[in-house]
Length: 101
Image (cartoon, rainbow, N blue to C red; front, side, top):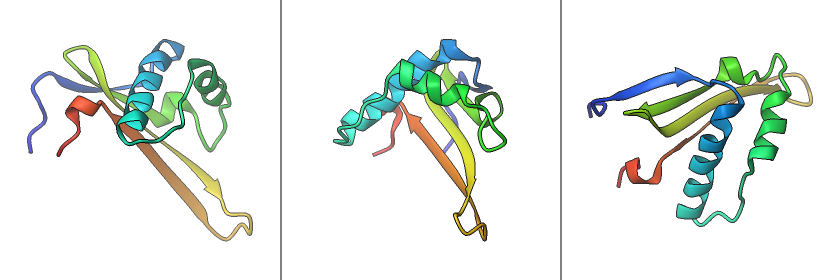
């Protein structure tokens, strides 16, 4: 499958992106029957807690189609409690209209 014309991937641009991220996540949750909802305030608190495990400027990207945000993806990592393993967590959301089948 080829990427749609006009699609671009860009880094997180700060708090101005949070409304679009929350919109995508909440639309995905609603489409999938998940009751959880995110808020801009909650996401702002999460994104502000930079650490070696997560830094939004480094670990979050957004997909735009002709200037409209249609996707978001991020990553973080944690060490298991016993310190034996490192777990890498990846997450993302795609605009409901752009999800396949």
